[in-house]
Length: 468
View (tube, rainbow, N blue to C red):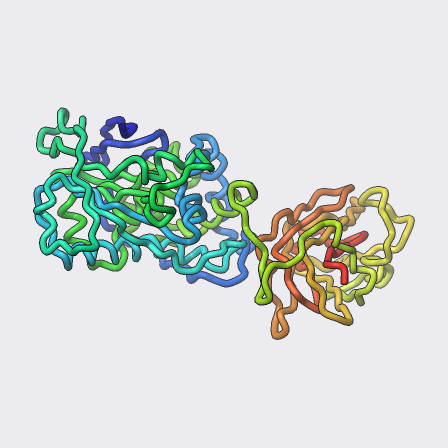
């Protein structure tokens, strides 16, 4: 039996009604307003690339809404579903309607849900270790009370005709009481918490979510179970590029929140429009993209939840710690600027600092320069590197730990950010370890952004690579 509950919410003059499954469900009602232009997806980008004007609001929402409300705590977000499906998502169309659906309409609905999903996931491509490109979204079945509504049914189309009673119909009699369902045995929603569950017929036969079209339904609803909206809205928008309610509800599947009340929004409001605030934008905006990316950057830290296998063109790369060595002493060190009384060779001289103000040995610093500065290692041969350890210099007299930094490698033509960077710490009096997807390179660089009027410095910089 499906886990179901009913609730009703209103926005402006529209009543958004829904029958929800599970404890991670949301409701919304949308209208069409223009937002800001959407930023293009970029390769090798990380959280450090987020525009400064978005940072405070995105971080506020993560801390005060998403963490507090636990909207990503259940391991069944769309992020989880994509990983479990190895870059795929399967849908069942839940047709709670008396309207007939032509073969062409069914084919267009399948293309539509693929298009709407990838409008979100396209912006994860090349970002912070996200391992997938285009997500393959497939309709694997239709759940419909009356199969004769599926005109010109094809032999390979899977149809489910079992129904349960929609309790929302008792509150709104215009809603069809018969609610079609697909078998629980093939539902990820019902089994995601069991890592040993085996779907009958294999992984390809499961379905991750419903696209749920309901006759006389107002507004929209979304969560990790799928997206629900009016049947006429589905049919009337099926060939549109960006579909406001559909994209909004998909956003909830990633764990993104609604913003109905003022106290639910960042202090001072949003720096751009957002599709997640009902009626604020009719398309995915810069803020939505970076909220999605920020969410991924936080969730990916749980490597048991999101295991990512390191590979290159030659296959798996060695990551056994017993076969890793510090190759920094073999490098030639250079920098964008070094204070005349300091020495860049201190980066890899093997000295072990006692604290971040240990001046008993040579140090690297770039006072009085501020902004972005870099230090670099050049090697006389290609190494496969996977980790760095940085001991920051902090003297309380003009040198401080950086505000942020990036680790870059030379790809043979230009500098690229390492992928899946996990760490990037700025703590004093200790080594700050950052691991990343192993890369083959002859050069490595740290780009540091200074904190306020302070300059930056390093006491020791280690680099982990495979033993030869």
